[in-house]
Image (cartoon, rainbow, N blue to C red; front, side):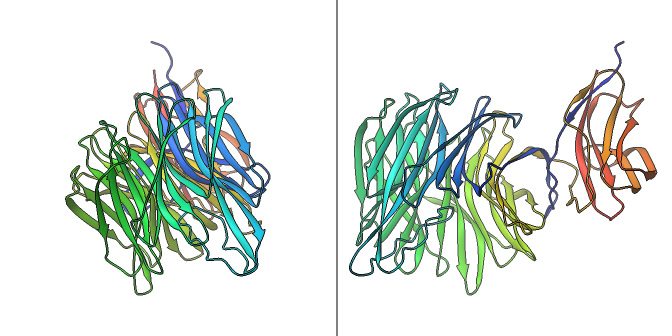
Length: 484
């Protein structure tokens, strides 16, 4: 019989609000400026994460399902900033990106400021400047070559979806000094405009995320209102005809951010609802005809918000956003069943601000979040992408100042792994199964700074966690898969 080998998978460390999932990997991207993640798409072996870099570029990152970067692209349309908000992947693994650029120009009196939702980072213009947005849509092939770029002045593009033949649909707003109307558009696979339409659903109506069902119908979450905003959900035909709209009003400021369609054609909307001084996470579900099926409000703090939504092939629901906590926000990820009951809830954060702005699922149904992390010392922000397991397992806790890690590699010579510690001191290292039960006490004693080999001889093939209690009290858990 061949000697056992260890396949080691890097694991995200986060603090769970309830029994949480296994975390498969985390990636942070630092290009030397301020990087933020707004949108994510997953299809086959491809992941596309999009966002913004503070030097004025939009940012597109292509990863594989193991979290390794395949390519990175930036684009600057000029003006005061270029922002990529959403992405989708077509059947050929082309990456389609929706966003907008912003320019400012002088004028004689103060214009009305367009209120942009969620991850949009354009600031309200100074009193003597006029703001103008231009919608941008780009298509990159699987190796990152730009195939085409489409623009439309006086529009912003927030949402994007692609049908089975490669046509893409956009949602956003038509914007002037006095107008902000919900807007939809359709482009063919070559980037030529098929149609564009505006809809006066509210004094201000901005379409955020966009989803498409098996029949090609479109579901949109719309930020609708004036001084007070509410959550509007709408469904359209592939030609842009309105099938139905549904307005949800609970608090004095409600908003729908993420939208997804499950295998049965039901529509899921994730957002927020505000009452008094508290903002809480909101999830809505409508059937394909627009009948409300349920509404769920989740209160973890006084500042909770959901911005992304996704569904797997079984109809389970994933939502992502952030929750406020002492010292900063934390990424918030939840899995709900088809009835809206929480199956698990997990957060991720450390010293600084951590936010998730979108979520998708890989082919196995494992959820992937995108957002950003901000360091409180340097105030530098990096784009964050992380993947959880869809199933619950051992609860993970925040890894504090001391650092220990199981490297992401494969050791074939012997059933052992390398534990690297950066601080000398007394450690407690256990091998646990996925339910959290101790299978083997690997070490209890002093470790000097550096790398140490630990043996798991006698353990059968399977998935485990290595639980490391550090000298400062911090605890980390990392995934270990033992195969023969």
